[in-house]
Length: 488
Image (cartoon, rainbow, N blue to C red):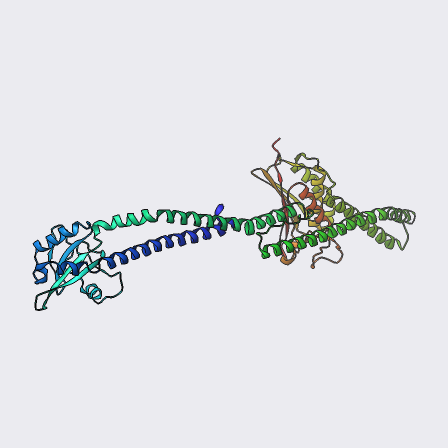
């Protein structure tokens, strides 16, 4: 969870990078300290081996033996325990060693560092430490020659033996511990300041902006963001982002308010116009029906019948418009109750049997359990089934059937109405519930504006359900929805 936070993603690399730099600096400091100490130590003892050779009668004559080196070692022990004395021949092979050096690991000494030392190359120069397989140490060296200047070998004195390296390192750490400790504190404070800057300058403003966006969305784009507080840590880009978001919020809020106003005006207009149509339309129907009664045998009776039919269609359309406007304003309240769905479905089918018979369509009820109940509003559910069956009959071919299916599944009842008509093109399925929808392949005499399906969709949404549609051209269309089962 935390690894995905912006503050962690920004602070973690800073922390790791600073820690890495701290480690490098500490090791570099240690290395520089050791190099400096070795340089000073080797410079002080540069002439040690030459002094020993010059003041030892045996070495001056080119004589080298264990007893001679033991005496030299004992003399050097008075100066300190960190010396090891060796004698090597011209090829670098050990020919004698002091008594203390009993743990010899290498019997050949590399001559290149010795020659660099004797030619006054820059210090420190690290040479072979015979007491270690891997370690190199600073040293002092002097040639051992016979009186005729014939080179016998070298007196090789290791200055910083493996026995004292660990103590030297401990000395370095102890003498510089205060500096290292202060450096660690300084770097820790630096990391803390960087993390605080990241939080105050980047993370906190973005978190605040994210919170405002969520509040703006949850308020249905009505609650405008508050003006951002002044923050000296905040980056220019963050200020620009907040400014753009504020501008965008005001623009969205204004547009959303305008859309709401237009939508309210549309609904009110439909409601007002529909109400205003009802009275004159009722009067028109009354006159047409009266004329048909008084002139039952008139030759031009068919014209009046067509006019009355269109008046009835117009009245039905007005009633649907009023119902949609009422549903869209969320004013309708449902009265949920247990409903024996098989009985209600059978009643609705019976109300359409005459109409279906005239068109040559067979109505069928397919119910696997006639005793199952659903929890719904009975008037709304009757309206849903009526609209779907009416729509199925209109779009079915003569000689085909419309099947109303009721199936039980766990805690829900699946209700579907399937016809055997022309079907709906796949690219139009997403629009069948729009009020203005009319299939491209619909018969000209069947001017359905899709208001019945729109009402079905709105009523099911009030029940917390939704309607699905499946269709194949030339085979028919199926509408289905689910309602919760009521275990009475």
